[in-house]
Amino acid sequence: MGKSGLFKTIKKDFETAWKSDPAINSKFELLFNYPGVWALVSYRIANIIYKKNFKLSARIIMGIAQTITNVDIHPRCTIGKGVFIDHGFGVVIGETAIIEDDVLIYQGVTLGGVSLERDIKRHPTIKRGVVIGGGAKVLGDITIGENARVGANSVVVKSVPPNSTAIGIPARVIARGKDKSQLSHNKLPDINKQLFLYLSKRIEVLEESVQNHTEKNIEKRDAELEKIYKDFISTIKE
Image (tube, rainbow, N blue to C red):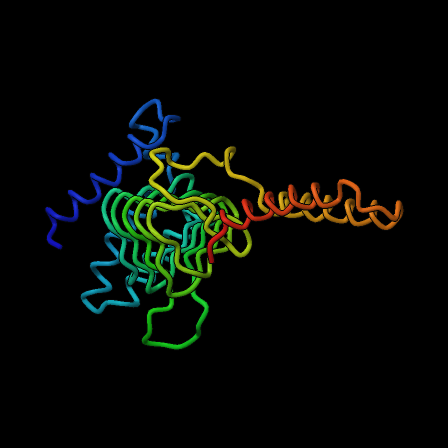
């Protein structure tokens, strides 16, 4: 990447922040209130230096950037254009991570590895248009498909298909189909709560049957619960 290409990419980083965050009232704020943007700018420079085999210098640049922005990006990783790290604090992007264009990453996200082996791809690939909610951990050499959504505080250890939403610990796919919204966390279901309620109702039916020594209405209620359970399971894909 030449100087003109570098400046165009950095300009795009600032433009993306301006377009993506409704809290911005002035472009002057980008200079002082957006550590994610400055972490990306530092990465762009360090990445070029790293590729020229000045690896220590690149690591020093990112070490200083980390101290200032609280965003830890390895200079070797690959980050496309139009990426926005919102708020930024606590974001970690590992050495072999690949982030394609137009990805939105919230604070506290980790794109980490699950192996200590060298010379292998240890970190995830994030495809175009992905949104990763705050605090989410995406771990290992997995792929988050185009336009996928990862819910806040989820732990993703398996690949997520394109145009789907994954939540939970470990994360499971709960919805498929392209979602034009970025990520409505308030609309995501609580799958743990749903399963707990199902189990509670199942126990209630069994206790009633034992205490009353009757099977009256048990079959009907059991069939209703079974339908609820099947509907619940159908939303979860391994």
